[in-house]
Amino acid sequence: MTHLASGIRAGAIGAVGLLACGVLTACGSDGDSDGKGGKTSAASGTAGGTAAVRTAYARTAEEETARMTLRTETSAAGKTAAADGEGVIDLEDGDSTMTISAGGQKVEQRVVDQVLYQKLPARQRAQVPGDKPWIKIDLKKAAAEQNSGSSNQINDPAQSASLAKGITDRNTEKVGTATVDGVKTTRYRVTVDVDKLSGTATLKRQVGPTVPMDVWLDGQGRIRRQQVTMNIKPTDQPDRTATPRKMTVRTLIEFSDFGTEVDTDAPPAGQTTDMTGKIGDRQS
Image (spheres, helix red, strand yellow):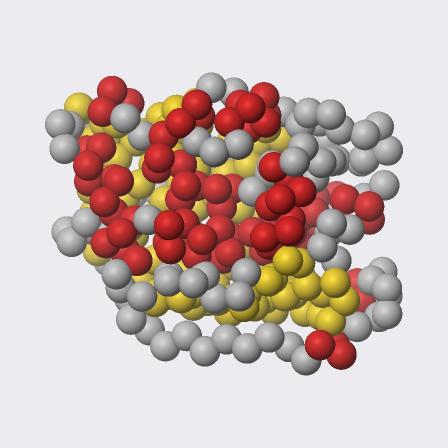
């Protein structure tokens, strides 16, 4: 589960980073609140649901690589910004190559050794020191800043994989079945107990005692789709920050084409600007 957790985190954080760069101010509203839909039956309890969801991360990671799509919706102050991503990911170490689309813009994204690289549109490069084509964010350092209670709030829906640690027998139910990208799946709905997660104190202040998550598993117990919704209340936020004090972040991730080739390289150092810890400053 650990490997897949880092893979999902690395793959999805890019959409959040793009939103943090200001796309929220030019957003529209999306009416599909259930991701890509799919017919489901009435909810019913399942004795083996908890074990199925917990083992799904390991079973998915065993495939080593996959094609991944994601959709991140961030809603605040009556506006909703959507970011869509499509590409390939190494489920073992999180390296990935994706194209992120948001606010009418497309951004090439790579994750290499837990460092996020994004190639900005030409009109945005002038806003970055050095006017270089690529920015980079060290995900490990960014996570450390969040966990230490910095002004960079936990608005990372890619936390979804690690949420499995908070799943217990009493809060897992089988919702029904659905077809995801042509594959028959079983859908489970879980309520994650935040007290069982790392960084509990800060996370609980921001999202409350529980977080809802839905997981769609195929016949081999692998994750085909996962959706997590976080209602976030930022804490200890400086007044200079323009980020809304309350927001809802919903992320939908889908995996397909397991075993696909993944070949990701970091861009040349001379073409990158390190923006680790500086995204929040750009919003002031």
